[in-house]
Image (cartoon, rainbow, N blue to C red; front, side, top):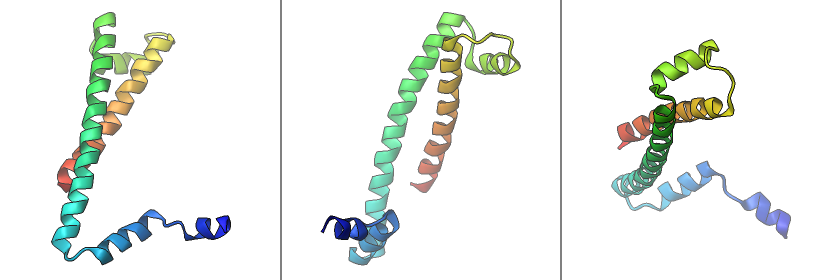
Length: 108
């Protein structure tokens, strides 16, 4: 019985097709998808605020803006302290998140 449930589990595309088939019209489907995208956009904006706060702490502690930091870090001029790797990772995560936010904003 468990194997039957696993086989029947729907993937994302199946769920989207089911949703599409059960919406009364395309406007309803568009409204539902827009709401889901808005939820994702809000979550990403919340993450961005956290990243910005954490990055700001590094900038204050090291008295260096993140753009200059990334250039110096990538050139190897700053050393290999764990803090620096964390800061660099936060900057990269922020950059990726900004791309996602931009795409979501365009979709809405």
